[in-house]
Amino acid sequence: MLAFGPHALALLSAGLLSGACATPIAGKRLPTTELAPRAFDQHRVIEVLPSSTAAIIEVSYYQANIEYLLEGSNRALLLDSGPGKHKIAPVIAALTDLPVTVIPSHLHFDHVGGLGEFSDIALIDAEDLRKRTVDGVFSPNSTEHLGWLDKDPLQTIRVTRWLQPGEQIDLGGRMVEVMLTPGHTKTSVMLYDAAMPALFTGDFLYPGGLFVESLEKYRSTLTMLIERMPKNVTIYPAHNGRGRKTATLGYSDLTDLHNAVCGALDGTVKGKPANAFGIPATAYPVSRRLNMFVLKWPRNPANL
Ligand SMILES: [Zn+2]
Image: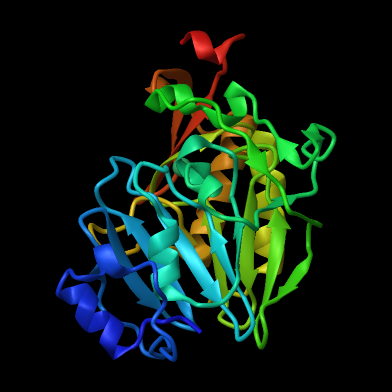
């Protein structure tokens, strides 16, 4: 269960959990109603979402990543482990006493930084990830990891599970689907809880400027999502909350983005030269709250 009952909340609001958080508070359950965000420490704010889900918001990190903890009755999933600047395992241990499997939404440094703190790490069984895994250790290359943007060293990932695209993970009373959703990167994944219904989109879709590695892959992923998602789906992104809260998106953002991607591909939407974190790009408008940067990778991005 998520150990985030009234007692834990009182500790959080008093700012007392940062030192004592490694020990789960037994017998606590996540409240069923949505609560205001509470500071865990100076680096993270926790927001309790519906259906035994919590958002961990990296408020002291300039990219303000958001990780999500999804809990069933037997086990929990953590989508992303954050930038790794400050330990995340104690945060998770304070929230749940269930076994936790970590799934990175993709391999960029700001989503895999804390993976080494966990013992159960699952990657999507896609492309050549498994082929490049030796003795259970996957080594991303610099273009997949991008750690040079933050001066982070390349890191390896010890893989304990391989997830099939479309696989349903049974958390105990809660089924979560792992979707292979290329576009931001070739092996990006999303988690989908059809009962909520909620889609956790990683960096494929968040409010603000999206970084598009492949317009064609964005189009095919968006076509699939528009067919599959119900109109009342809530989208939880991995960046750009509203200050200390998450920011949600909806079905219309999928169709807005699909229209813009199709327009960029057929030339009816014009782009402008731009610079995205030092990477040459073409910027396209999408909607009032979305725009996108289509990246033009140099031959060796590490030399940027
Ligand atoms: Zn990111």
